[in-house]
Amino acid sequence: MSSPNPYAIDADTLSGMKPLKKVVYAIGSNLGDRLANLQGAVAALEDTPDVIVVDKSSVYETKAVGGPADSPDFLNMVVVAETTLEPRTLLERALAIEDAFGRVRSERDAPRTLDVDLIIVGDTVTDQEDLQLPHPYAHDRAFVLVPWAEVDPTGAIPGQGSVSDMVAKVDLTGVVRRNDLLIED
Image (cartoon, rainbow, N blue to C red; front, side, top):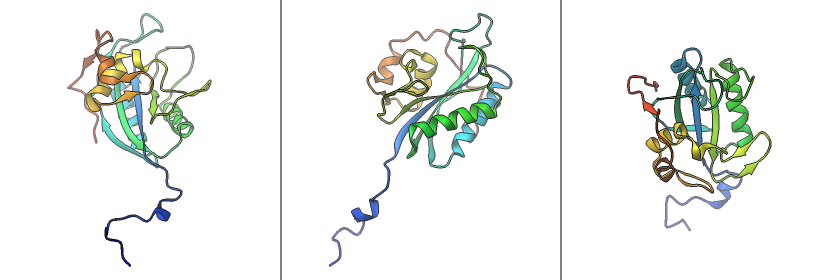
């Protein structure tokens, strides 16, 4: 007997399949060709197997947070994607992308060619020394929240709430959308 629904999926077909999880990356650069660094990071994420880029925010220019007082301004953006990959694999890919763009890890908050931060992976909450999800500072950082809210206004940080609500609570001083700087598809 055939199924009354011709689009029904046999549950046995689904065994072993992993559900897609939303992943949000915050990308920033304040050394070298900042826009090219962002463009390269987006291209590298788009080339990552099992990562489907869903949306990219506009580019924003922001003052450096922490670090030396004379740190150059950052260009920042957010990438929203879907994936079946595990958080550890996503972190390793982010670090590899940073390394490919000459990221040097010296002191905390030092200027850098590229910063690719993993903000959320679905509802995953983990507190390991080298992997904290959600990102422990994302809820306070306008340079993450503003671009994220632009492309995913219903987004949320597990345990913190909606991105749109958080944007209303942070200092937006110095977060400038750069409509003249575009990330190419």
